[in-house]
Amino acid sequence: MLASALVSQEVRVCIAMPVYDDWESAAILCGQLERELAGRPERFEILIVDDGSTAPRPAYLEPSQLVRPFDVSVLELTRNLGHQSAIAIALAYLHDHGPGDAVVVMDADGEDRAEDVPRLLDGLHETGARSIVFAERRRRIEGLLFRAGYQAYRGLHRAATGLSVQVGNFSAIPARYLARVALNPDVWANYSASVFAARLPVHLVAADRGRRISGHSHMNYVRLVAHGLAALSVHRHRIGARSLLAMSVLTLALGAALAAAGAIGVARGTPLPLSTLAMLALLIVLVAMTGFGFALAMFADRRNRAFAPARDYRLFVRALRSRTRPPLSTSAATRG
Image (cartoon, one colour):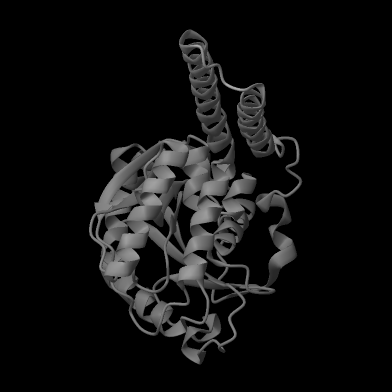
């Protein structure tokens, strides 16, 4: 169990962070992590996922040049796959090579704050490592337009899925759940959404969003929309079921309205023309068929799950560069 391992100071934690050209931020964040985690009983490792960066990695971030208290590795991908896919590959790699006792997923730009990592780990301890601990965003510092768009997205997400958006990627995964995350094809589209869609136990820890350490974000509004749609796609089965129910209710309401209009017309001696009745009936049938077809499309991929990150991630890995390569394994006792 992770809780007992914390007492015996044998917990091994890997911090996984995707990087796309933000090497300066990543270097500063590594230093911040060292300061914030100094004195804690856990043993830490850092896995940087180079998501096909075009900017050369600075010499001071080459694992062979690092003189740090943490073991640092750089997993180089063959091309830029995007933030979520890079997280999926990191989790699949760690699942394949042994995750230690827990994996912390965080961004490398500083918006996931180093000082909040101990809070996530304390959350794991409080839950006995029986839940995935996510940082719940309480305060955001983006511009007004971004925040307005984000609130609109949250409303759409709640209407479509019945679930509220509370978290990003910043989280701590106990080893017991890593296989269930890494084997889930949906993690390739959106990590946090895949956890909630899989109904894994989740514990939330309040954390404000930090400021970018340096440089400029690669995210723009087009990519934000794409990111939101990818998260929604993870819940496609839930959206399909809710859409079918909504269309069914709408079909019944339209049918009842058509019947009522026909009855009123007959009672008044001015029945609706047959052509009008036929067109309205056709509209109702089209609404019903659209809802059924949409729901069927949402469920069509249930048997088509050929891609598994935990098995296929190697196709996208070019190299692993590591200052030290300790065996990433843990005892059965600490796995619980």
